[in-house]
Length: 495
Image 1 (cartoon, rainbow, N blue to C red):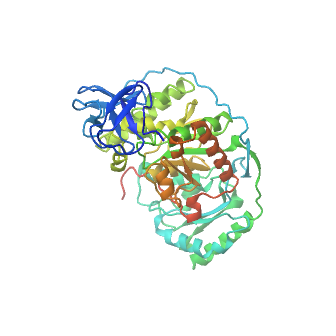
Image 2: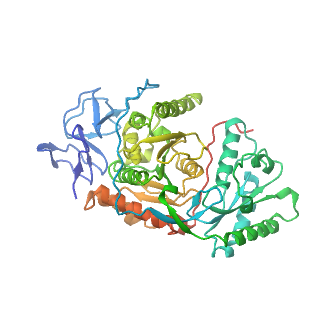
Image 3: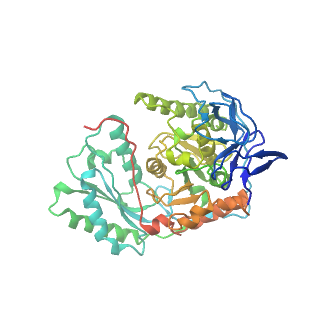
């Protein structure tokens, strides 16, 4: 295994791939560099003297400016590096040519559940969705008492939890109604019990106005205040839905019907070197087969946004991408917050120093293909290919937004590990092998082998094959553990 990597020949830093001790001599393209201090895995080392206020280059792009003179062999991190990002930028459309990836020999089909509207699910789950936080406990109790129905035709029975649906104003209330309606209509759902209280702002009659394409055979509604025993009534409705689910069968479906969300969290200095590039290569494979991938977490595009803008399919898509970035910066300013208050403590511990450093790694999940559309928060995907989605970087909120956009699967890369899952199968992909070996109950796929004996394209094909198996019914680790989370974007006032 290599001890370090120079990602781009223009870089003036290298990244340690293992712990390196003070005094170690590195041979970087024929030039010797002596390490001045101990360096942890994922952290950066200067391979030439960098004057104060000069750019630090990684991935071939600036990731910030030196705050003081950095000596050759010195550790480069938050103590001597700062972001160079300002507020708003003027963007110019400079389109670059993209090409389709050759994906011969990989599956063109999967076995899925075709719905009445033509969409295809990879699960036949039965969901209980509360309209308001007041009935979450009731939803959970109904789900617990109905677990014996899981089996023929019913993959899982899940009661979701959220604290919203009442005492909300403006965008917050719209977000709640939109996301709940999106999930009620999700293709992974064989049946849904919508559970209301009766007096909430987002009550069932109001929510029905947001359900434009609902298959009425698969949805039941229950207002708890209108019945004597809401648990008993809820169980009866779930039993009805389970009988309907038993009629559903998997059929052969083109991968054109597959949509996969792309997300990272608990990132480290290896995220942009191993897992994210592999996911990007996977995205290129799927989109070359007219499938769909969705990239989100807009604040982690800041500093790398022009790479995405220049891959926009046309001027209109470029303009939508510019608006996506500017609107999120305005959101930060409206709340009096620093736009570039990123990366997180865990990111920094793993070797990520600035937002540019994080974003240039994060956006590699998008691969190299054309950006075909930009989606608002809560909007469902319409164009096949690589889409950008407006949502924050928060893992649960962003992953829920991907599910709401009709992603049937979410790929989640991580350098530090996390057990969470969103409403759809959430595939955990480790950036390093030690994490994979330590948390096998969390991690589904290891990209650490990219540093040893595997090639990026080889791993991308293995990941693609795993995604097809999951689409065919193979369960991911979070499903086996019974983890399912839901989080809605909270932006404003609570009454």
